[in-house]
Image (cartoon, rainbow over all chains, first blue to last red; front, top):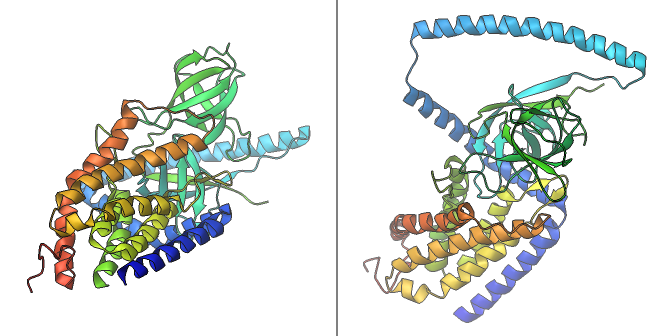
Length: 271
Length: 182
């Protein structure tokens, strides 16, 4: 009797696995499954994340009223400075667009930024992703660039209603077209599968063998490929070596990917 | 049936909890809770129950970890189900020993099988990504072996917790040892 039950269970299992492969064989269905599951666990991740933050705050100790007043004053001044800078840059942007138009180039549209909070870090061994608390309901779509004020973080992949997965630039599957400051060198930035004892490692490949990049030279997104806007800081050159077919530089990421908490998703402004 | 439900719920909780447990310092291996629950189920449940756990656990693992980038799925969703079921079947073979009260079987096999899962993931990624770079340096070995060591260390805790829960629900995973006083 038990043997018969086992055979039936085995047969049902095999059929289910075959059905899973057939249904999820199409990438779109896998993405739907992932989005559905992400949506299911999102409330738990969000609450868990806020609890984690509260515990960290508690550990760091409560700030006194005087400290808060000083911080508030400092932030108000910083806010005014940034607003003033922003106004000036908007002016330059308008002027730039006007001039580009006059020259017949496509007009540059300003970007809209959606602030997001990291609610979970990756739970797997070989992938480097984070989960953020914004999803399709907040106009997030797959393949949107994610940045901080310091530089590039990655791009969105799976998007559920109120959460999204962001693949970090330190992941081997995230490739970014890049340009090197002060040179005409262009290449592809890619993460490495195994980090350097916990420190994310990214490299810039497909450079010419004569590139001879110097430590400290900055690397920015080139805007090619259509996902990442141009001019976003990726990192700085750590060292350069010549490989068999190309030049390769190891980079220090501009953003500390292991400690970031808040990010911005770049949403292109619609015409 | 109640105990099977508890294992399923715990598996879901484990999948969420894994997100808040960072890599272990120095070795950077992960604490893999979902396989640990799955492997306990493989020893405590009969074959149909184990297969059901493998299906749910594998699907959950793929839903969380399969990478979808540039319109391409890196490793087809469903592979984890086969991996879990295969390892679960091997563990089921040791069930008679487990039923006699040999708890260290769970500890040892959890460690080996968890390491095997991490190794299999690494090999699948390596073969899928071009150009194929089969790197096996110290860090890679620590991640593979470390995950198994952590699982082996934590499995007695999982074992006693689930045995306690099983006793509460009236299910006896080790009948020859006599967990439940009749």
